[in-house]
Length: 295
Image (cartoon, rainbow, N blue to C red; front, side, top):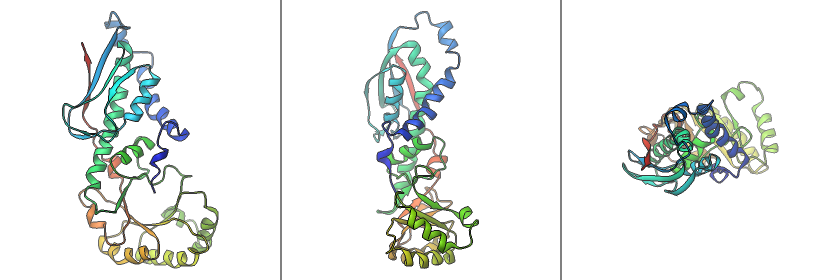
């Protein structure tokens, strides 16, 4: 359930995310140009150097994206730390060189990028360290910065889950509300979804889990697939009851719903393969990072 190798500027979909969340932010910030720099600075074309410095501890993420952005705005990257590096207050993250007006125009976009992605990576690492060995931590599609958030999760030790709606089949509660013959619809999904990375169904009770398990047992030999069952909003005690038999049947067991850093371990009963949490993207604090011009 991890597609981190696709999250790079060479991938068309990820390049679209970079243009949407990074380049568009830069263009929206400029609008008609930087009036302060234009009016206040006498020599806007002066070549200068600047460095970006961490002001608190955390995990660095966004360097791949920062390098891409700097190339777009013609700022030279002199040296830099790598994604995944552990930061402490005062650490120098990168050093850049370029025109004064170019660096001042790009400053906020560059900092927003590194602060956001490093914050997500840091939150992910903290939560991942709370989980038992072998239990994976998955991002959800509840993101502020789309695939950039997903990549930040992977830098922190988590996994991507779905990248988009065409990436994998995920049958949720609202899908189930719109059909009446579950077995017939599932058979069609299993038969026609060979090109997707996995098939997943969300269940909200032990009875629903048992119903799906009975159907899966009929199909698993005829249509071999990577199949995930999501136990959504289950109590930890109910997860402990149902997860072992689902795992034994060959299903990947994912738990989700109201899970965060403080309570995650309670949901990791025997048989659970993965925890998905929106907290690592929706509740992550930005890491405090600043840019300083060097004289």
